[in-house]
Each structure stands twice: as C-alpha cells, then as structure tokens.
Length: 144
Image 1: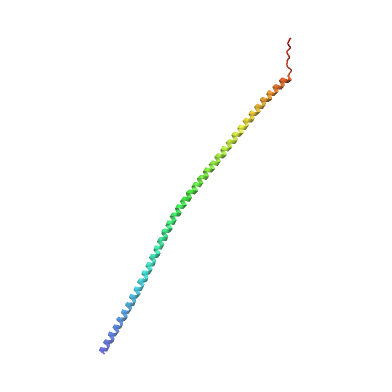
Image 2: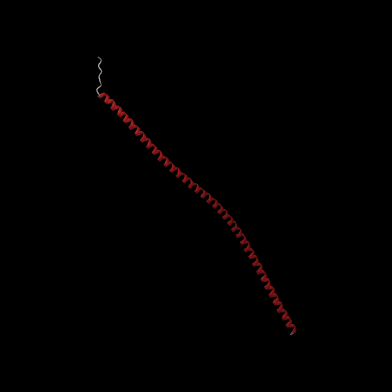
C-alpha cells in the first residue's frame, strides 16, 4: 500500500499543481486582456479629452469674439443715442430760432405797418391841406 498510495498522492499533487498552473495561466491571460482593454479605454478617453479641450478652446474663442462684438454693438448704440440726442437738441434749437425769426418778422411787419400808417396819415394831412387851400378863397390883391 505504500507505493500505490505514494503514487496516487504524487498524482493528486501533480493534478493540483497542474490545476493551479492552469488557473494562474487563465488568470494571467484574463488580467492581460483586462489591461489591454483598460489601455484602449484610456486611449479613447484621452482622444475624447483632447476633442473636448479643443471644443472648449473654440467655445472660449467664440465667447471672446461675441464679447468683442457685444462691446462694439453697445458702443454703436451709445453713438446712435448720442447722435439722436444731438439731433433732438439741434431740432429744438432750430425750432427756437424759427420762433425767434417769426417774432422778428412779426415785429418788423408791425413796424412797417406803423410806418405805412404814419406815411398814410402824413399823406392824408397833406391832401387835406391841399384841399383846404383850393377850397379856401384866395385873397385877391388888386393893383391900383
């Protein structure tokens, strides 16, 4: 019994060692495949990260351009508002100048009418005086 038992025991130990070696080989293969998969995922992640970084850079650039455009538009709107304010002041000044001119014209017309009335009165007085001279008998002087 001794020799068969030893042979059986050695066969069992050999079987266990072969099973252990196979398990370790399978585990090693599985770990290697898992490592390759993780490396591929990491590479894909790096590619996505680079793309996202490029997109972020593009978005930041677009944001800066929009900020510049917005500032330019705000400046343009400010200029328009200033021009409108100046135009309104100019229109108000023109309106005031026209009112003053109209008042001056009215004053001048009044003065002209007063002068015309005075001239008409003088003419009427002269006509009355002339009429009075013609209707008044003239003293006749006789030469003796």
